[in-house]
Image (cartoon, rainbow, N blue to C red; front, side):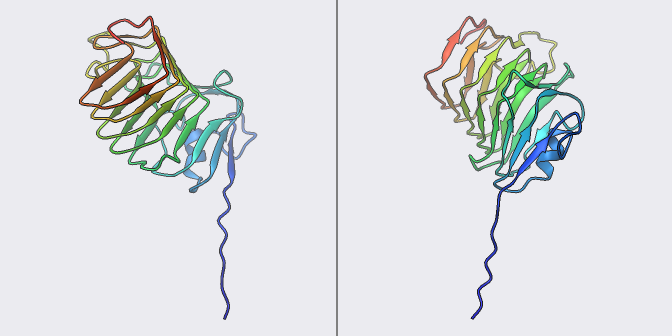
Length: 212
């Protein structure tokens, strides 16, 4: 009797915008990943195709920067309705995005359709909306700094979203240990909840305009 044993070994995929890794865009690194892998993003300012509207496609992987948010920036360049990360039907909390600065997006991070990612230790600033969670999504939003976002303009491409730093619509998010400050929104600068039941623990929420 012979038994065939197949080992599944997770791997680390390196993204380096300068060309010294396996891929030069974050999306390409994710596309090459399998369940359990880590996509490690080296320092730099990541812009353009492959570095915005980034999708995990339901993969249970970790996408993180190599040296933290001060050194790894995703800049969406103020393109209308641009987003850094999009989670759709990523139902496993093994989906992690960690250690980035997300800047100049319409929506920094969007979780919807029952997705449950971990969004951890990021800086989200100078966007219209920092994090938008809707359609039964249940993200864990942990240890982030969400600041200087502004969704007050009626002419903004994201004016249909209530709130600014974190906006929840039909969502049961866990929001803990974040710093949420100096955000402005017409229906809540800090955390906006509509038909939602979040768990909010141990956050610093200060100097937001429009509520929060």
